[in-house]
Image (cartoon, rainbow, N blue to C red; front, side):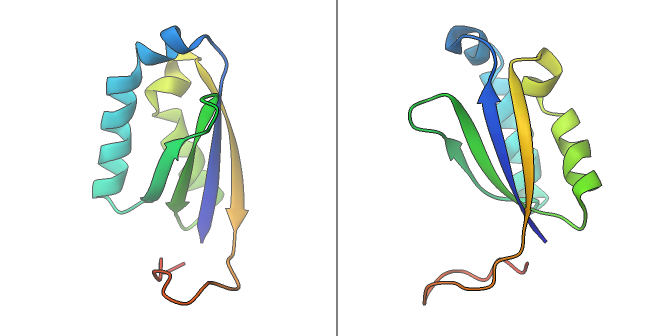
Length: 96
């Protein structure tokens, strides 16, 4: 199953930036494990979005608890379970 993880910054950007290197290391670990498929900043820069693949919501919640942004209290999270039913021709198969 796919999940959209929506992050909203709770603190000023300067405070978020203090944790950015650790957050990127967190993202890289989950990309290496093939949990995360896409990620990036919102525009304007008020948070971020992650597209993840997992078996259950509890699994994604556990990952979020390990995010340095979560641990530092600089971001809040919304997790949306998502089952794509259509895709444009040529889109990658995410194995959802």
